[in-house]
Image 1: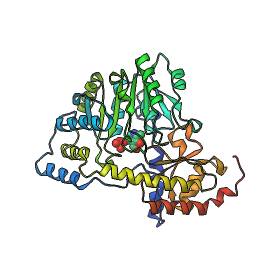
Image 2: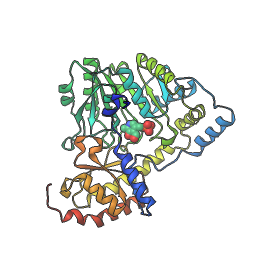
Image 3: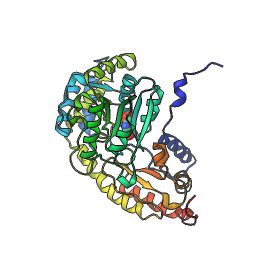
Image 4: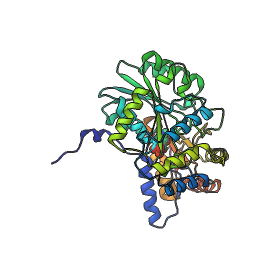
Amino acid sequence: MRSLAARLSVMSGEGALSVFARAKELERQGRSIIHLELGEPDFHPASPVLDALEKALRAGKDRYCTVSGILALREELAAYLLRTRRIQVDPGNIVLAPGCKLSLFLTLMAIVNPGDEVLYPDPGFPGYASITAGFGGVPVAYELCERNGFQPDPDEIAAKITPHTKAILTCSPNNPTGTVYTDAVQRRIAELAVKHDLYVLSDEIYARIIYGDDYISMFSYPGMPEHTVIIDGFSKSFAMTGWRLGYAVAPPEIAEQLDLLAINTYTCVAEFTQYAAIEALRDTSGSTPKMVKEFSGRREQFARELNEIPGFRCPAPDGAFYAWVNIAGTGMSAEEVCRIMLEEAGVAAIPGAAFGSSGREFVRFSFASSNATLHEAVERIHKVSTAWQGAPAGR
Ligand code: PLP
């Protein structure tokens, strides 16, 4: 039989997408489903962004354009990162891509040789381990434990660095835990990266969605501009998931290779969306702060209400829009709890193991839905929680 590339066999899909598929099937059968499985803001870009898109299209900005992204957008991104993260980046080191995920994919493609080890957070975004393995690399998990407030433990990271380690992946705020890494933790990770000459791939896609102090980028620490690749995009902070707009800010030797990879794959990002993205970054209507304020209110209500469900334990997250709920107290597996919630209550959420083995006893809910919808979801879960209240403790 004809065979396909072996590298695919070590890659995996995403739990969120398979739960979504089942939820959609139930909807087709006429069931009412509350979708709390996908990481997608329930907002849309503000009208100045749509106006800019239309204007660009009418002006004929629908051609092939600069591979790394139009200069006006890269300059605007540099100004935006200075304003919102207090970091000074060179527009020449920014490469746009159709989605943050592709920036991550191509960056790993640019740096990982077979056998290279990449440290990544567990629980974390499923792509980290899958893409690393797809390029023949060895994903090495570092744990985000509940008893440690889901912060990375720099001692654990230090102990896992070997002569084969190439990079450390960080994600603050983290998907799925919502953890904003502390300054002290980030500083120690930065010191390790500089000491061992490693790259840090800093996934900052949720950087604007935080509920506390100012955001600190991994790029800010001494020696880190030469070691950091910032992975970011417009999906979450600007509610533009379907626009497929992401970017990497990379040291010149990587930015150059990202350009080469862009030439070999997507050629350039759609020109008119880049003009609209400039408007999104300027955010003249204050859409991002308004969205974050709304998320902040939901986060408090939702975490409080989830904590009232028997067997559920959930701290309010520091960032992103996910509730990461410890369900060990139900006496059931996260898969079983999610199955009951979806099939019997019509509430779609994701078993935590989809984000790594440390997530086994957790369930992730997205709170990118209105307060009323979230409240109804909790009421529905309350009703079916009798299933586990009667279950014997432990498994
Ligand atoms: N990184 C993290 C941590 C994410 O949660 C996601 C999306 O859920 C991505 C990257 C991918 O972003 P994009 O939709 O821009 O490809």
